[in-house]
Length: 457
Ligand SMILES: Cc1ncc(COP(=O)(O)O)c(CNc2cccc(C(=O)O)c2)c1O
Image (cartoon, rainbow, N blue to C red; front, side):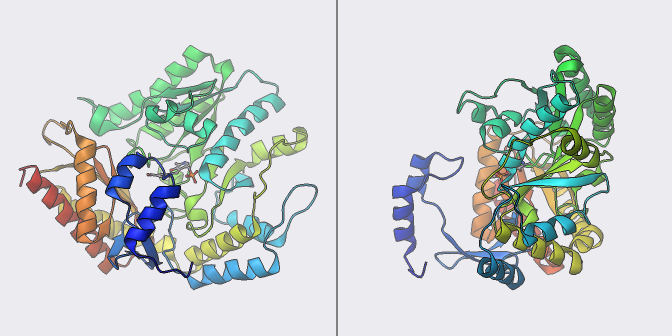
């Protein structure tokens, strides 16, 4: 990697050999991608020397910030000591043991075991098989159906994409697989109509009960959802939603599975975002902030009840990946969560910088002609674009509008995420108040330029 190429050279070689994610590659080859070359703290640089404040932590994952020498040292030392070993055939290694021991210091006490993967998708793939295995072991093998949500995101493998509710993803590969169902999303701004958020939260949750009854409770094994939707638009449900979902799952003996790939490891100011919403999931899917993206790693966290059932009565747990609990990933994850804890970073997001960000966003955007809603908690937030705030009318071409705003953000020196009609930020948890000021100010400039182009300012 010591070759210093021009941006043009990078782009030409990239276009010749590399298919990117979620993109029309032909269009990208014409538009050409930015080549991100460096990262330090809350900033990244591209191959032309432009510096950007990263308001998205890469992809919601660089919680600890870029360029941490302690994580680099942890990876290097582990590589020198034991670059790889596995948990097949009666072996294990100290890195994954020490990580597992430490991980449960930050998880609610109802959880006792974890199965490691390399990604969130693989962890949700495993979730499908583990849920079905659990019901087999307890003698209810017909409880095979897992219910997800439209516009939920759980990954891009066959099962995890099926669990997710992105219809354009289902079209690639004839998804969803059998025994996966979906209910609507608790997105009040777009779908709440005249209902109050409180009422809409209940009616959204009660769609789960209707669907369970339609499918037959004896056939439904789990409900799978993000505590707040991430890739679907950073959507927080009304406060009435999750307690009602939990009541329904308990009533029909349906496992409640929270996907904490985005919400985990301090993103909202709690270690895990479900802790804000008043429910107690049976499983947690984790990835991203587990290693702060320095090395790929994911996992499926199990409640003590589920784990004991599978261990005591389950016999062979027929799953395993070559790199499950990879020693280098485990060593980096351990250094990462130790830093998040020992430097008080999660605490600071909860009590200082998180409230500061949320307050500044409301002060900056609540009266803005283009912004109809601001949602968020800790270091995750979304601003909702509206053509008419009074009637909550969205832009017909909302995806283009917010994509344009994101592009203007790059010109202003900030990276934010655009999803249909919403601009999202999920900054690195180490951001200072000054950097938060910079984040909001640069995003404000991009939003104002977008409004001017729309003739709204
Ligand atoms: C809630 C959730 N669950 C599972 C996954 C899949 O994890 P892996 O990617 O590691 O397999 C995710 C991933 N989330 C994700 C991934 C890529 C892009 C974006 C976006 O917001 O554009 C979001 C996620 O957000």
